[in-house]
Length: 578
Figure 1 (cartoon, rainbow, N blue to C red):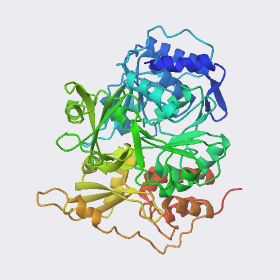
Figure 2: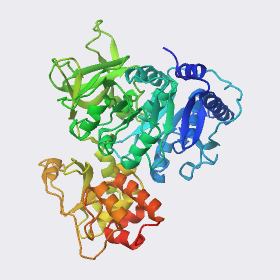
Figure 3: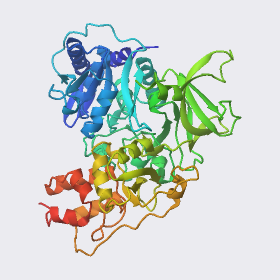
């Protein structure tokens, strides 16, 4: 199998002057990108960071792609992070993966990782000396991602070069990506789906177009970005696609959906007009493990497809015996794309990565390393698998895997909270699915302002995707006979009505339209954004639009403290600027 650097260098040789990556109006050719990555690799060698874990503390852009390739060429383990996440969380990630270095815009270490060795990201320039070290071996760590942890600590997932190279060889072929394609880069760098975008573009000689923060948010801006840059292929979650306006995009050819269960109804318009694939794969098996091509609006059930080349897959019962064809079971995965476990977490690794006999192995004796996904699946008559749900409490919201325990542990660390239970409320009435946190306050404590204080507390330690939309205070949470929180009882309980008041607050026309777009309900007087249907991600997009349009500087913390129409009316100009 070709190495990762082999696959990338082939594109450089085939199309040296073609555009490799574009950001706004800036462009970089394959020759320039490869040279810049070489300079980045040499800088890592000089700083003594070759072979170490290196944080990519950069916003999405040409410099970020260069840093990723430079880390790979230097043999460093790239640790992509989202620099917009709370500093406390980023500091935990840096400590957990034992980061020794960071690539930053300024060359100075970030405040949340002040002890690491920092170097500056490189941009296009003269062709420099090639990196003075042999390419890393197949088992060397290429990337280190983080998944949600049930104990409250994110789990570092080291993914070796052989895994990334295996996916780089398979994913573009399955998605039929060719050198003339223009691939949208929409994914946050903290999610491994960003590898689909980078690898599908740069191993085929295609053009990778970086979206700005505003353009990558599902909605009219994203649709305009896809049209303006004549995007031919992109990947996103079904939730993100459903939130994108149905507009004709004559250049668009391929959409690859993944990250969560696909229900055809909300995206039927896209299924009827474009080639839409459904991909499946946990971070522990590197981006994708299954691929189903050409999903149709009438597919029921929707397949996740067949294994990618090099993927070992088996469906087992609770005793880890193969299930009969068509019966449900848990999916176990192995092969070329398998991660090495969870860094520094031997107990979690032992629980999830098992040495088992693969039922498809004719030797009947060899044992294979397999990852226990926790996902229930069954085989369809044509041999493809379909996803049935989880066997545990793990939540998947908009493509983000979230262990309830991570949020609950963070919540109970705040004084005044005795217990917490996180649930996912399904989508309804045009509103997105959202997180609801039920809390039990300490007896005798004032609970009136507890939800607001807790939301601020969580926002400073968790990524926006993990901050609950609703926080509901209980005198006591329901419990089972064994004393555990009764989640089924909570899931069936009615939610409190959205608060409203007659304070006379009226939002300007543009703000009112965006409020309705992101919550799914009109901005009634005094309405609470989160109770009305918003969540932390939509709040980010909403505030970005408001601040750009009205020239304000409302922060997310400001809005968490007072997420009402009255607060916005007090801060927005009475009329839109000319």
